[in-house]
Image 1 (cartoon, protein in one colour):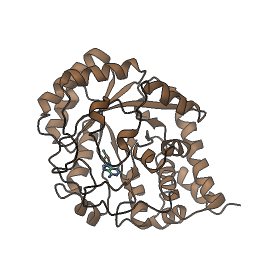
Image 2 (spheres, rainbow, N blue to C red):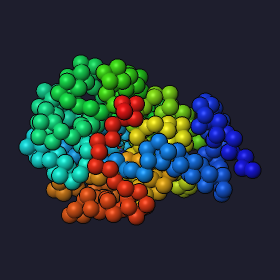
Image 3 (cartoon, protein in one colour):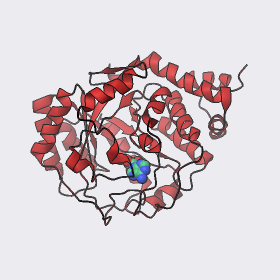
Image 4 (cartoon, protein in one colour):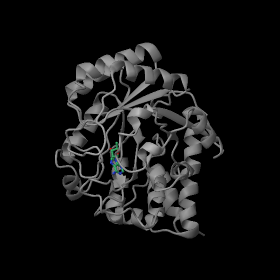
Length: 347
Ligand code: 5AD
């Protein structure tokens, strides 16, 4: 009899695990570790079927006024070109995403004052009118009023990671922001009935198993529709460039599987940063509970400059991104969905 099985069963049946119990699960190896992955995968298939939803990503500006310590496009970073895509370029890319069988476009940028709420609302309206895609925003913390206006323009979803719920870590790595403001923004998104996503970086400097366990539990506390987590990858030219990734990659995968087990209903992407860890990193995450894949459709001439961390711009470079992703997913015995993949609570 596997000793963690009763605990996993209890969690699935609604038991609120303690920090120490999550630490115990994170420490598991061998058969117990495998049981965590298989439990997460089975739960995913039970609730979400065999389908993987595609969200086409457009990184439309790499300008940023913030100086987050981990980020390769932080204010003042050099060695690459800053760019802004025009409204036409963004809308055309969204049309290409639609033609590539993806049901959702994700619009992501740095904290770029050029893209005011009015400008963003125009872009969202144009995308909606010409593609009907579900629109997800990943544009940093916004006020309640701005969020309301963007929602009125047609935005359906919003991603804002909390990055770390350990105050000392959050504060150190985000000189321009407070944890409370981020959480307030997440709560505002929920009030405005956005499909709301958040998550954290795994293995940030200073994060031990206890902190990781708390981050995992915090995803549940927030009652999220979408949960995006990925490994912290040290980026050159940032204050964290000399930090390291975790020696034991299994912590990344166990974390993803536990996030799934605690949040069976959530849409969970296999974050791009997993491919920076190892070539088939995103495949590993699909095997432990992710049900969403976010192919990067940023046009090549811009993509190489959206350098959040090393290796990022080298993903999804094939001429036919959809075909490559479809093959990758089908090789895992899963199929791609051309649906919008709204939050399960909405169906
Ligand atoms: N390593 C891993 N993830 C990173 N992100 C930004 N920089 C890095 C990095 N160096 C992630 C953050 C952010 C998302 C858009 O990209 O979690 O929320």
